[in-house]
Length: 636
Image (tube, rainbow, N blue to C red; front, side, top):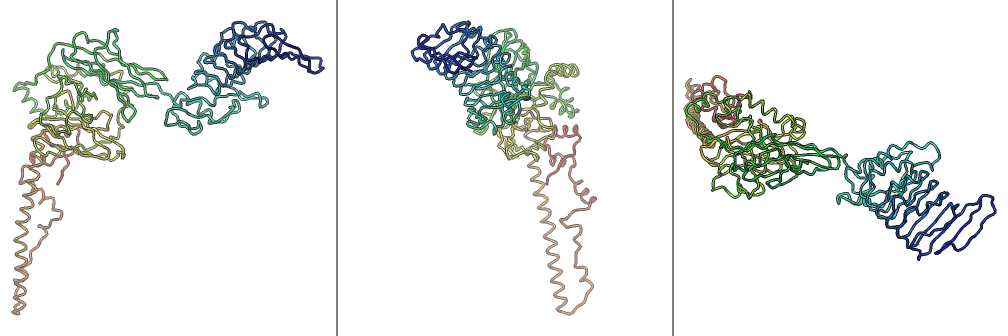
């Protein structure tokens, strides 16, 4: 086979014949660095055209339209920065297109339609920043694609699917799909999960020019080989709201909260369904469990703020939305004044009171520390520094299933149905964000210290060394709760600054999760303190009685021993010696007989002792314990 080789400068300069074969093909080489435009007038039967190391910056439309026999077009190491979609129109027989070593930032992938015979495309050592998903349609017939040494960060899933779907080669080794993807600043996130897994598993259908693909970002995996990277698959965002409808009086500060999970961590945005501008500020935070929370704070709400608010979560995998309805009315809050009949009803039915307390659903809502919503409970001005407004102490809110007051007592069933309707769209999402059925926090107990201080104890046998807890507490019946963060490994916290003779509710949960009713306890500050004081008094009395009993017995024993020595000394034998021994069976500090123990305890008021020694230190907690069917726990 022979070749006709042309060398061109600004114009075709000469003709050289090599070989004596009957079949000839023409090869044209243009490498003059002063060439700035694509030459014209090449022989129409040119089979191979090489335009290299020139100053050409762009290829005009249909520049090679007359070269219908062209099979190889090499334009390497020029200064090409832009291509037209029809730059290669008319090249029906072109098999190889090499554009390596230029400064291209994009390639017109649709131009491959003008080159139906194209099998090799070399774009390495350019400045390509992305491979669009639309390219999937045009690269299916390529058997060689070199995208190495560019600025690619990721690849679309559609392109990866095309390469994963390549059938194993049936012919020689050269029939494999050859890919060049090395020397790119890859961002190793969930979008590259399939590529990393594909590169880890050798296949007979695709081969890499260089298998040492490395991550450049994020910083935690910078420089790590794909074969050593551990990535997670992208997951659609799942979003939930604490409540589906919020009611508020005019002038109150309202917090709307929504949470989301997904891979990667989704971005949360708020908007109004009616298109109005949001009247409020947004804060966002991410918990250690990977849950992203967004809080929309609407200060001093008015009737214009009523409507539907849409919280949208977005990541690479898609998006999800949730709707919260805000209803603003002029009805004031219940002032808490009760008639004598209402008070009598609550005294007669403590079980219903405790049951109602746990029908309130906790809504984790952070309050902006600088703002003071009107719904916040009044705090004692003498709070210690540990419970002041700092980052470790936040405010939470209770979204009532049944609004406290006379309005709810008339028809609780209707309100329960309304609650089920409002929360129907949350059932699937909230389950994934709650604690496991085996609760981490158990046996929450209140120990009273003073009228202003209590200690909260709990057990967490299944907690890890890194598990942190949060304590939420508020005046019973108030909507807003206070939060105390507890470090890992601790199971006790002291709450100061409480108001004497006031009923409170306190809950303990894993940080970032919503507490369950089994993790909450209702107590009264005066009862908790008196219970602890009474217990200490009982301990003192028991010790005193023991001393009173033990001292005479010691004297009797000593006297008996002295009497035996005197009788032995005088040689007298008397049966009275046997009478000097005392049986200690019933006075032993060991386990008492059931009858005796019961008789001793019956001397005290059994109801009062049970109340003082109960794990729950208030009447409300006892009522709740009866509802749950759990026996009282006692401490000595």
